[in-house]
Structures are given as C-alpha cells and as structure tokens.
Image (cartoon, rainbow over all chains, first blue to last red; front, side, top):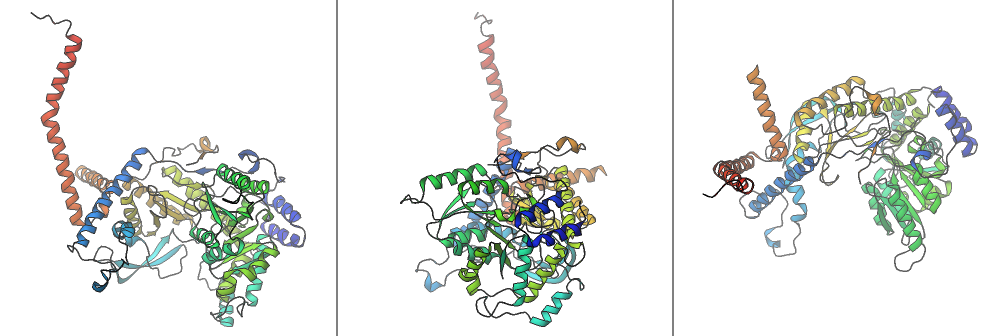
Length: 553
Length: 76
C-alpha cells in the first residue's frame, strides 16, 4: 500500500486538473498497478476489477416449514386474544373510540394492526431501548422492566454499563466524546450556538455550510455539493424536485423507505426491478424505451435508476459497473444513495464509486448521509454544478427546511478532514483500514462457525439469519444478558420467513470486543440452534477461495 | 455430573420446542393451554397407534402373503 499521505496529497494536488487525470492518478497510486478503465462488456468477468463475492444462502426446507408453523401458532393465539378483548374477557390496552362515537365510521381499524398488537407487542422490549451515553463501541443502557407483558415499561433506575454496541451505524468510530477530538466542535458551538432559526433560502446559509459543501465536493471528486439537515428528508424532498409526471423511476426492490417516499411524492411512474439483478433492470429499460409511456406511447421525459450503495438489510453492495454501463447504453440517469457506504467502503473511504474504481462522473446524482460514518446528522447531494444549483432553488428541503446546525457541520468537517488526511495525521486512513480488517475478520469467523450470513464480503453490515419468530426475542434478550446490544429485525422490515439480527461492525471495535461477541455468538448459536449453514468452512480456507454467487431470486 | 448433563440436555430440548413452536413468546397461561393441547393430541396419537397399528400390520402382512404365497397353498 502506498504511503497514505502521498495518496491524500496526490488527490489534493491534482484537484485543479481534469477529472480523468485525477482518477487515473488516483487509481495508479491506490492499486499500485495501473489498470485501465474497462468500458466494454457487461459480463461479470471483465467489468469487475476484484472478486465480487456475495452470499445469500438458503436455509434447509424444514426451517421454512417451522417458521410458518411458529407464525401459525402466533396467529391462532392472536385471534384468541382479540376475541377475548372484543368480548370484554380481557382488559383493552389499546386506543379505542369513546362510547358516544361507537356508531360513527370506525377510527381504529383493528385488523390492520393485528400483527403489531399480537406478535410485535410480545417481544417489544427488544426495541426502543433508551441509551444514556454516546453510541461508541460500548455504551450504557437504562434498565427497563415490564409488569404487564410489554404494554407499559418502567425504569428501575439502574444503568447497565459498557454494553458492547453491535447495532449503531458508527462505522468509522467518529461518535466519540474525546475532548481533543471535539475541540473545534466546542469552539464552533460557543461561536454560533445551536439554533439556526431559518431556512437555507432565507437567512440560514452560514459560512460553515459553504465550507462544508466545498469540502464534500472535494472529498467526493465532484463539482459541487449541497448539504441538508436531515438524511431522510434529503431523499424524500429532492427526488420530487428532480423528476415529475411523465418520467420513469426504476427502483430496486429493497430500496429504503426514504427513496420510496420520494419516488411516490414525485408523481412519476415507478417500476421495480429485482434486487441487484441486472437482467431484470435491462428488461425494464428495454421495455420502457420500446413502449414508452403507458397510454400515449410517447417517449419518457426522463428515466432515472434509484439504487443504494450498501443495502442495510441485506448487506449487499450494488453492482455499480454493470449498472453504469447499462445507463450509458440506454441513456438513463443514475441516483446513487450512499447512506451506508460513504466512509465505510473504498480504499480511502470514498464509497462504492471508489470501491469499484470508477469515476464519480459516471453517477449523475451522488447522495449520502452524514449520520452513519461521520457521527453527525444530515445528508448531501453532489454532482455537477448545474444540478446542485438547480436543487438550491427548487428543492423543498432547501426552501422550507431548517438548515444544518453549525456544531454538527463542524463535526462533519473535522471527520472529513481526518478522513482525507488534511489534519496532518493518518488517523482517517487507519480508521478505514481498521474497519476493513474488522469486517473481514468478523464475517470470516461467522462463516466458519456455520451461521448463515447475507451480503458482500466487504460490507460492514452483517445480517445473521434467525428465521423463526420465537428466536428473535430469545436472541436479543440473551445477548443483552451477556452485555452485548444487538438489533434484531423481523417482518415487515424483512420478508416474513427471514427475520435476522443485524450487526454493524465499527472501526472503533477492538479485536477483544469482536472476540467477546464472537464467543457469545458461538455459545448462543449452539444453544438456540442457529447454525444452519451447509457450507461452514473447515480448517482449510484455501479450498473455499473461488467466487461463489448464490443469488436468491 | 452425568445427571446434570442429562438435565441440561432435557432443558435444551424443551427450550428448542418452545422456540420452534413460537410458544416462547406467549404468556404463561397461554403456554399452559398450548402445552395441554399439544400433550393431549400427542397422547391421542400414541394411543391410536398402540391400539390400531399392530392389527393393521397383521392384516397387511396376511394380505400380502396371500398374494405372493397364495399359489403355494393348496385348498384341501
């Protein structure tokens, strides 16, 4: 690996030159060997510079059967409890209409919340747990007990200290309270205070925002960028500004709610393609161009493809080279949401664009959030200057939403400068490399133990499949007893048979912490019988190095 | 020592049963009801098997032996 400061200096030094030169020198120094940009061919072998290994192993059939059995039992008891509640045999803990309104149109549709009321409520104590310290690699949890089976909670007053944090999106470890690290943030806090009390278009544009936007643009290697106060709102408020009626949105099956909301708000036609499936996307593109708009057969005004860098529920990385070649062939636009991948993948933490060795010019709209890797809040949209200037005037978020507050902007500035090496240390690059090491170690050990893990080998989001509804609650509770905090997810955020526990590896985790977690997982995996994988690696890792793509349709 | 291991193993089996049938999430009275129903159904299955399976097996054996060995038997 080349001298880190040389890479950073190289990036800066060529800042004024054309993008091509910037990219070529970047690739040259990062890889050590010059590899030209391969622009032809959509097949897997030529477009990817390194192995693209993703796992989506299917569990044995009996697991699916037992999962459905478990949900069946839960449903039957749900009906029983609903019956008892409706006939007054049991106290109703939910919202209900007043007596005088019983004849009106019903306000609370009971059946829609069947799942929430009868299944989610029973294991509700595993979510919304209040924490009372910074969400670093370890945090403090407030102890909560329930007397009436999770309908109400009360705090005992005790604090569970130093719970290992495997759930926070703290990929680079910038969520820290170290006084030296936060020096500039404290200064800015004392200079600006916390409130902005205005929107960007009125009086809410500070010099901090201008500085931050310039820094983001330099970091990503694009012409200009714009920052917003909230990551979710960046997606949902800017997509309507970019597309409207008469446009076509091709969105991935597993896109985040913010993208879905933005797409629906825009009023454009939405078509969904199968997750990370290039064939499906190409079919949709061909149909769109051949047949045009539904009734008038006119050409679509715009075709835009919405994808994410890393999908947070699957841990899979987008197939960017193939999508970019498709987009160039069919003349569509690409909107890349790098919420989880900015800072977390890539040799210097610049996201999936760098991970695949591509130029940021290939992606039309680069979007990301500062919540995950930078320990702050907010989002950005970056791209060509024309695009960003358009968004400054036409975006709902710019016109109506309060802008980012200055201490948060300073936190992002200091994190980004640390990542780029502008603060004079190599700490940023060390963090990125530590994250990569931690990720590979964690995933390798989990595969060896025999768990089913989804996703790409390089993604720091690690979903561990639990499948059965009974195991969701048991897993989370027992991990907390061992002083490890995990996030478990079930239906409806995931498909009904595939509930999972999602681990987020951080650069701030030490090897000891990861080993503690892995040993606990080993024990718990045996106790709860979670090791379903048929491909657990033996003590001969060299036999398993070939590319394996077990894609689940 | 051995008794403890056996007890732990039985507890582990019971816990697996709770997890698989999702009765781990139920309240205690629901769990008792569920266990009662399952044990009743299981007992009925065992009783039926005990009463009927030997008779059916014997009849099936006679039926098949009649087909295959029937040529050898002479009706005297």
